[in-house]
Image (cartoon, rainbow, N blue to C red; front, side):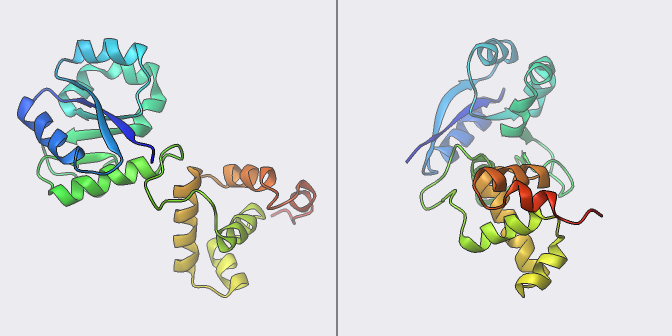
Length: 197
């Protein structure tokens, strides 16, 4: 099983060691490096590839130039906040006030969102039903239309679409359409003959 490498950039020694304790108990995760200083962290990050990052709010604020120069890093970054994280906040935030289970769930979710990391039992292979839904999405059908066509509930279609996005790391309709063409789920001829709205 492939492991996900985490960098910890957290200025508080106790908080950093607490997270190390949590992370080392999660199967498939390893700590690559720990930093308490924003300058040393930025120098490292400019030269090294970072798979996943947990960074404290204070170091994040002092490292803004790094994220401007490497915006893709934000997708694999978990922001550690001292205040409670509200549901409308970025999904990649954890609070020091959250319980261990919540923190572990968020860390697992961010690793699963990236197609190059699959925990044990997690497959990027789409089921036949998921391929059918990708095909329907590529043809421009809404979740409601797909549900009616396949005799499913809209909720079930939504769940399938979330699973598809998680497995493939693709969230947009255009991305799913390209995936469908490349993987022979749909042909270009079928796409060109679909009715325009």
